[in-house]
Image 1 (tube, rainbow, N blue to C red):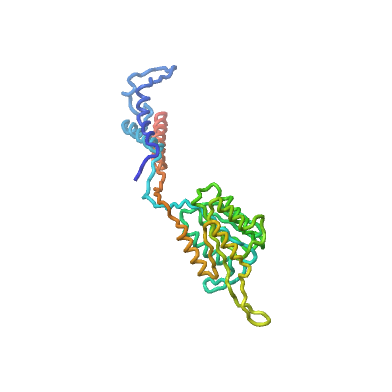
Image 2: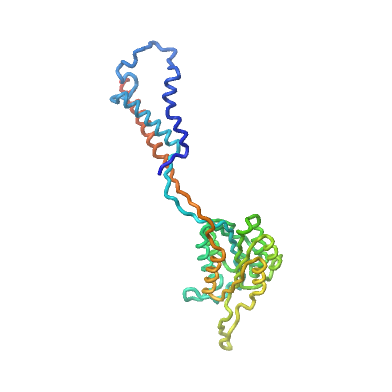
Length: 331
């Protein structure tokens, strides 16, 4: 349907008629001859377009004026209502970029990949499903950095996550600093809408605040933390002495990760392979459902250029006809 944003402007339609009726007709002070019966003279002598009837000139002028007023009222085309899911949740994703994330103990599409690559794939799919949430991204290593502030633009957050590389934030792991930064960025938001998903494969080895102290601060700020410890429990390594079993996740501090989640009312998850990591994100979707409320909006398309163009075309045509009529009179 079509509606006008400023319909009150249509009150200006009778203004030309009112001005003509109420204002006195101005006559040149130095006129050599005044002709009271001017309307009886042949139309071309009055400067009207040659060959164009007087009534046509009158009504075309009115049509141009009405079109100009209609364009000023901002006609808009309203599309069909579109459903928009609004969750009101502010979800921060914190990803470990320390050197240990380059361990290749995950399988994706039949190929062996490092932990960060698996995290990008699964976390990216998780972000695609969070329609209506504001998403933020924290990358941490020696220090924690805010890579993307809270935004509804999930595509940009996903792009920034995919561009992250191991060692970008340093080789060590500052889990406490990442939590502290999340608390700072989510402070002031509604308490029941603050969620942090923290992914790491090691233990806190640097930083200005310990993970447990940061968890206490998060609990006091109403921030719920879900922690994910990633890394296989066992891989086969070949060396000069043959093949042996190695635990690539021996540095993972599961006790601290579990304490962080428990202190803040969240949960700790263990992802030993890509399938487990994907299941964790599916479970997170259930624990923190996206849709809380449903709203509708109608797309609007501005239509004012059409009546404006028509008004200008009519006005230009009348002006051109008047100029040509004056030229004919002079000749």
